[in-house]
Length: 193
Image (cartoon, rainbow, N blue to C red; front, side):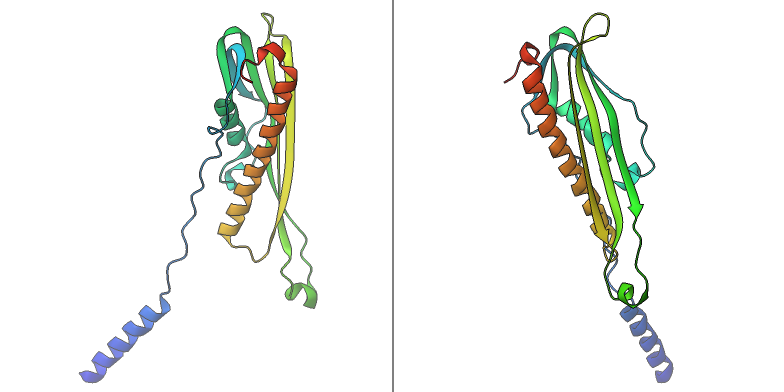
């Protein structure tokens, strides 16, 4: 009886010892927004947001896909005054690509933590003020591209963090470029200074 109890206790101890802490859960990333930036008030009745490119196959791998970040930018930064002609923000490109990089084999490759993936992201858009015939009275264009590689040893959470930060940096660059273009080229159509 005692031997049987000892065997059960030993089995229970081994079972508990083999159970380590649970793996870390998926990290939740905040949406990439621009609500803290000063809105750009455009003399327009409204500003329509449209995209010409469907979502790509790797978009779902990014915590905030470039297309979503671009739509957020337009909603957060652009304001129509309610007067004048309509405006149109067109997302020409919002892509995210993941490429597997070649890994060296042999002795050197075995003992080297190599770059295994590259993430490429790009955005491009135009903002137009249209006349009654849908012709542009004013038009500006901005684009941004960035890439980043990750090591073989990067954990899934490290890779998510890299993809998130990449889109965040990309959108900061796009924000600077588009704001500068609007300020330089919209003249009286830009009501906020």
